[in-house]
Length: 80
View 1 (spheres, rainbow, N blue to C red):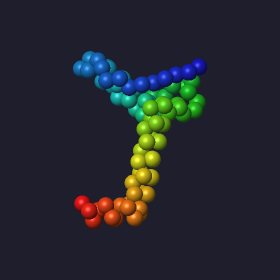
View 2: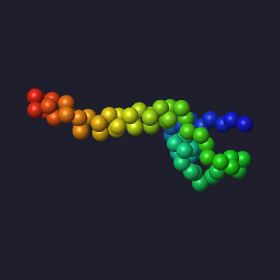
View 3: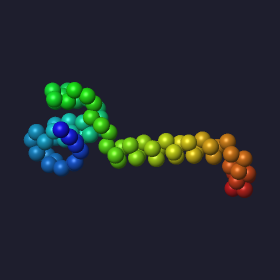
């Protein structure tokens, strides 16, 4: 079976829903909660949005690292 868990902020100030929101958010972030579903024997897959975000972050860090050692960077810093 396929299971998709996404945290959606709603039902605020409704008794019990605050705790449900906390657990849903932890599950959506791929963290372990205190109450695990017995049917899930393996970790949940990461969402496509989380994978894209991690990739964009890695590319930006790589680009920053490359730019700091680039000769063009030092030349442009002198202009500024």
